[in-house]
Image (tube, rainbow, N blue to C red):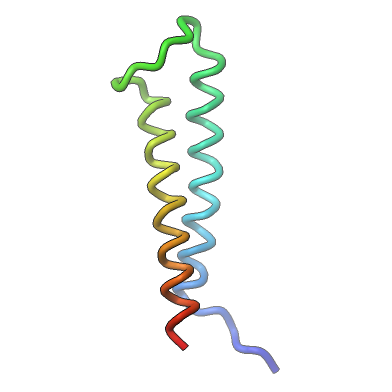
Length: 69
């Protein structure tokens, strides 16, 4: 049979899900914001940046785990 997914695989999936959620929240916040201006102090900017960080971490970790065999 197949191998069961390890904790690393679950972490990559959780980071990917967090990335999608944070990117959607940040981008929709920018679009729906009243002023329409992007400021670095905005919580939407922070959410978008955290989403990008989660996406990069999940990509790096996924490649690292795939090449571990």
